[in-house]
Amino acid sequence: MLKLKKIFFQIENNLDEILENKTPLGKDLLQLLSSQHPADIALFFDSTLEEKDLLVLFRLLPKHLQAEVFEELSETNRLHLLLNLEPEYVSELFKNIPTETLTEVFDHLSDDELKKYLKLLQKKQRSNIISRLNFKPDSVGRIMDTEIIALEQDLAVKKSLAILQRLGEKQEVLQIIYVIDKDQKLLGHINLGDLVVNKPETILKNIIRKNTLVLNVNQDQEDAANQVSHYGFTAAPVVDDNNNFLGVLTAEDVFDVLEEEASEDVYKMSGLSPAQDEYFQTPIWKFIWQRTPWLVGLLLLQSVSSFILSVDKYFIISMFLTMLIGTGGNAGNQSSAVIIRGLATGQISRKNGFRVLMREMSVSFFISIILGVVAFTRVFFFRQDFLSAITVSTALVLIITMSMFLGSLIPLLLERFNFDPAHSAAPFLATLMDILGVAIYCFVVSRILG
Image (cartoon, rainbow, N blue to C red; front, side, top):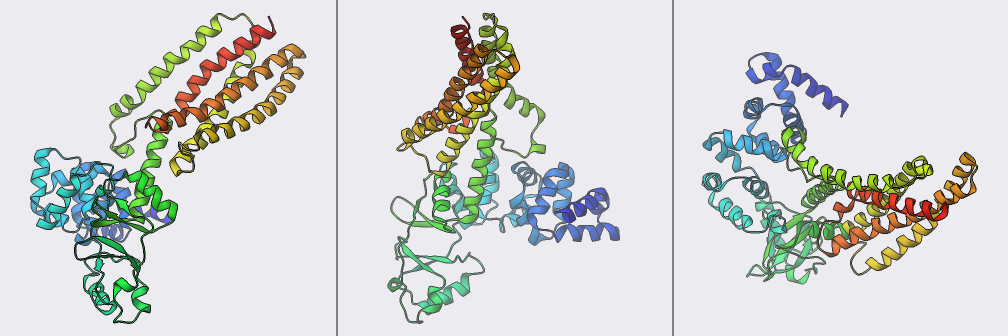
C-alpha cells in the first residue's frame, strides 16, 4: 500500500504532463498508472481528480482497461463520464460493462436520458437491462449475474465440456454449474469437478445434485446475501415465481451488498442518512442538511434534562451526574450494538426476541451490581459520606439496568415494526438515557437524602 501511495503521489505531482501525453515522463507515468489494478485507479480518480481532468485521463487509459475502471468508480463520476463522453464512445464502452453495473448507473438517469442511452446498447443487452429495471431497487433481480452458463439435463459430460470450452470466454464459468430442463426450469446443479471424474457418455441428470439454497428474483438483497453468507456458498441460483432459472447471485455480489448495508448501519447509528456518494463528491450543503435535523431534535430533547435539574436543590447531583449518565449510556450502547448485530446476522429474530431480552436483563443485573459497588467505594472515599455513596450507587444500578433494558428492547421493537434497528443506536439512545438518567438520579436523591 505504501508503494502504491508513492506511485499516485508522483502521478498527482506530474498530472499536467500526463494529461498532455507528449513528454517521455508523462507517457511513462501514464503507462505506470495503467499497470495498476482497476480498483486502485478508480480510487485515485475518485479521491484526487477534478471532473475536467477525470474526463481527459479516462480517455487516455487503454480501451480494455476503461470498462474495468468505470465499474469501480463512484456513482457521481460514472454519471459524469456518461453525460460528457460522445455517444459513439459510450456505445463502445457499454459493450464491455456488465449488465448489473449499467443497471445501477441507469437508475440515476432521468427518463429522457434513459431513453437516449438505452438506444446505444446492443439489443440483447438493452432487453436485459429493461427487464432488470422492472424489479424493485433492493431486490436480487437488480444485482444477479445473468451471464452464466447453465446446462440442460439431457446433455452428456463430453458435450457439456465442449459447450463450456466454447462459451467460457463470453460467459462466466463457476465451480457450481446449474442444470435446467428444456423449459429453463431449475433442476439442480453439478460441480465442475463432476465433469472431470465421470465418464464422457454420462448424462447430467444422472449426477445432478439438489440445490440447498434457491433465491427468488424479488427477494430483498440483504436477506439473500445473509443467507448465502450463512451457508458459506460462493454462489446461489436465482429463479422467478415459476422456478425459471434467471441468473446467479455470486460471492462478489454478496460482499458488495453486505458492505453497503454495513455502511448504511454505521451512518444510521450516528443519526445520519446513508450516503449515496463518495465523501469528496458530496456537496457541503448536503452534509449540513443530513446532519442538522438530528442534532436539532436531540438538542431539544436534551433540554428536558436541564429542566429536571433546575428544579432540584442537591449539590451532589452536579458532582456525579456526568459519571452516572456516561456509564449508563455506554452500557446501553453495548447492549444495543449486540442486538443490532444479532438481528443483522439472523442469530436474533422475533421468535427468540423475548429470550434475548431476558438474557440481557440478567447480564444488566450483574453488571449494575458490580459497577454499583465500585461507585459506592469511589464516592465513600471521596466524600466520607455513607448516604451520598448509597445514593450514587443506587442511582447507578437503576440507570444501568434501565439503559441496558432499553438498549435491548428498542432495536427489537423497531425490527418488529419493520424499521431499521440501527436507528436506535448512539445519538437517540444516548439522549434518551440522558433524560431518564437525570430523572432517576433526582428521584433517588430526593428519596434517600430527603
